[in-house]
Amino acid sequence: MTERELFIDTVLFKRPEKIPMLTMGPRESTLKRWSEEGIDKDQPWFESLCRQLNISYPHPRAPRIWPGVGFKMRPIFEEKVLEHKNGHYIVQDWMGNVTEISDEYDVSYIRDGRDFVTRRWLKFPVNSPADFEDMKTRYLLDDRLPDDFDERCAALANRDYPLSISIPGPFWQLREWCGFEPLCMLLLDDPEFVQAMIDFWSDFVAGVLERSLEKLKPDAIHVSEDMAYKGASMISPDMIREFLFPSWQRWGNIARSAGVPVYDMDSDGKIDQLIPFWIEAGINLCDPIEVAAGCDILQYQRDHGERMAYSGGIDKRCMAKGGASIEEEMRRLEPAVKSGGFIPGCDHGIPSDVSWPNMLHFGKLWAELTGWL
Image 1 (tube, rainbow, N blue to C red):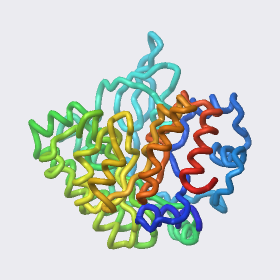
Image 2 (tube, helix red, strand yellow):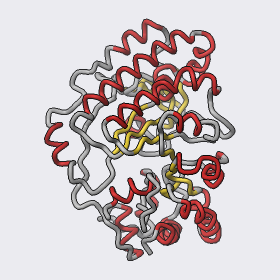
Image 3 (cartoon, rainbow, N blue to C red):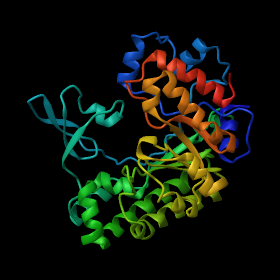
Image 4 (cartoon, helix red, strand yellow):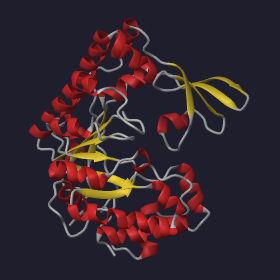
């Protein structure tokens, strides 16, 4: 079976003999460390892992093709450094935010997200209804598909890897426009303005999806929200029901009508309160099941059965410690794998405190858990 077939069958609880080895990957600083510790520099990191461990894995036959469906603002804001002092840059990023970052990085790290960059937000692009009217002009439905979209769709028809279309969810997108704390205050002080922004975003995403899914048949629609802290959701269940749920459900209906088998939700933090909403909205996969936030996949499986599948769930702290710590972590997850509907992987991007020797140790256990060794 191809990686694509294994992905779909695993998420749909068809229990294939092997589970795809899919995970969030390493960041730039992690790869830099690994390059000094024994990774094959002329190979992608996962292929190097498989080669060194003698894992026979169905790598995609050809370079991956992306459909080029666009949800990003057009035009983007000018990226520029506004100030440089005391080891920090004040920058304007492509989204219109003004932030402070260490001068170890530059504004391109915010654009590409290629490493873990701590920043302090100073200003956001939407502070009033007038700002939002300007922002709306950057999200017109025209030209959201590339000129060669038909050719890309034809080339993707026989792909052997899972293809996902990624969408910023309503909470995620409004946080990008307004900032987290201002958005939370707006939910209390001006819910009509919040609803107007969400309605616009829901319509825009639905329009792009409907146009793209006429010809493109992805395996998953992936929604990014990141709306939970270590203890609970960032907003109340009542607010979730009122403001977010309708968009999730609407987009899921569009995906199902187009024959997309997987509807995936991404949120860090403790997601116990959120999973029932996601199931009701038609979502059937969630990630990354962050262990440090208290997420317990075994309890989730007991609570929700085959109504929800999971991806991630391996504690990155145990990966960094290696040895007995990661061995115990993989034993903990064996029952979750046997229950089906679980693609085990790192519960976030692989951080730079994971050494390459520890990654190889983890990789062996990972391959054994998923049936490749």
